Image (cartoon, rainbow, N blue to C red; front, side, top):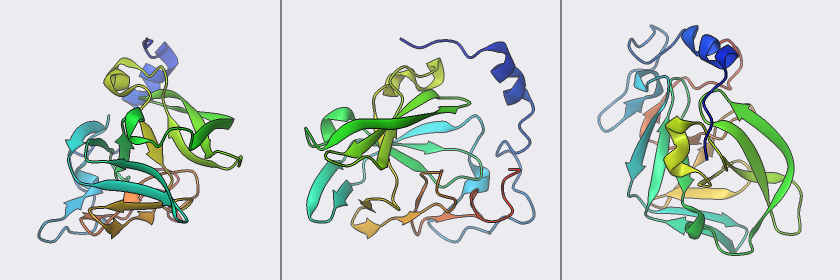
Length: 182
């Protein structure tokens, strides 16, 4: 199902600058019950999360789950992924576009049925590090409404990234102006 990363990608991974082992001086200090995204590892960690996740578009329910995983990657707010059966059948369809994550592999994009703008993505055949979550779906909080335990999620800046910003994470976050080299 999954393939090993090519040699060029393994070499690129070896040059990652920030790996979560030391918080840089510009990082925000987390308060009680908060996490710094600068303490997240690289390569990212996949952490089970039992909080209630809900995704809606207008009044339409798109997904609901209490079984998700958070992908925790240095400098990024977590991306929450829900299992495929958490998505309401028929709500999402494949749409144009693709991208490549240096540790998850090739992504495909999903739109709300009847539209073409991507609102979610998944990795159908990821690299081994993410293979247990092949087909799990994450959403762009700037394009659909996402909540974690009823807290509205704020989108990660930059348009490309899909991190979920909640009150329990502090940055600064990749995607904001001046962060392209992170």
